[in-house]
Image 1: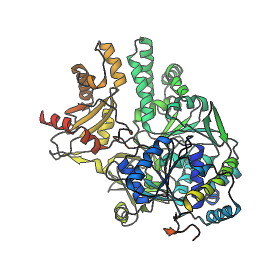
Image 2: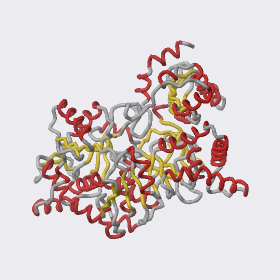
Image 3: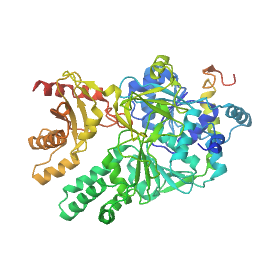
Length: 534
Length: 78
């Protein structure tokens, strides 16, 4: 096995990936922010012979991990620095004998051979290695070919980390479509890359769209009344946008003007030619999908997991086959059912050629992941709406009971509260507690503008979260959103956090889901203090 | 699902040949180098692929390789 720690995708990673596939080397992609503990676990379990990293910084980190573990993994990088550089990509010419041996290996590869072991970030517990075969991934590529609206004359931009299963499978599919695939090789250059490449299509995680949406909401605090009016109108019109329904004359006229003055500017930021964005990895707020669709960027949300290579369902790009707030229709060849009676909510079960055979070296976990008749238990709770669109309602493991005996599904509540432009991140607390509370990260950029407007002197987030007026502002937002909820679901108190939760800080998974246990641990004292007050 | 496609590739690396047959793209894979986008065609990628497995072979596989199809440790020429 060969462990790889890429950052963004690039042609070299794809060449290396295809090369390994042809000689039967199993790749183990790891996210660049994996903790030392996770790296140790993965390297020990896989006994990888080589670990290839994106640059020299990751190279040094891995050298130290390997040294501590006292294992014989060779560590190399594909960066420009000569020390530790991987010569595998630089061999000028292979010997004929070697090529013939390679050819033999290549022709012997079968579709049920293992392609990769991918360790899931998992919001709880130790990472598990998901075994994926060529057949698993190929089946998902074929279903993507049937669903994505791409032609070989188009350009696609790739900027998600290459270890991300969605991005990797999508990149394989892009090659099969015959499109020109452009890789952003630097996270700081993504905005410029959109402008120079002017892509037609890309895949994204919701966080990026949320940031763009938040930026526009921030503009509502601008001094110019005309700008404020136009943006407010754009939000209002976009909220009512439904592509499949015919709208009245005045709506169409208003849409024309808000597109001209507001929405087209957002589209230009993405190069101006973007038509479609496939979103996955976490839940997308329906109002954001609506907003971008009104700007003529069709956002389609999908759902999947590493264990399913990854796509299970996807809203379609064809008219009438998209429903905002749902994750769409099962992919061709994939069976989905709900473990409940009478069309009620229940655990989502999946079967199909894209489903993994199990977890590497963990037969116990594999057995636990499947039903007796071979359905994969996703651990997600969902329901079919309109008999065909799957709606995810929560993660089975995240649902908890308060000490008052009420069941709380935290994800829908969290999505509800981040609708406030002043709340950037939120997790619900309440397991075995008398009532629901929350950890809240304010949107500091909007808050700073609001403070300036209110004449509050802005210093730094760690001081501002203690400011009485700032707290009162967030309280007002929470109260406003609480109004729409049943009593037992309302946030009774909250801790204001002074730092954004990130993948780098180890508080978010690589697909931007919060590590609940880590966050609860990090803010344990503040949480205890909060409950003692009541 | 399109039967033609299903028959076209069964292993992920078959995509390269499939693309080359169906839509030979002069700039299939692109990255930004020295102020401009540099593109590689699939034929160039395949040329790059030839030495790459050999390089991997030389570096890693000479010792031992975990062959997924057999799911057991085997020597490289075993």
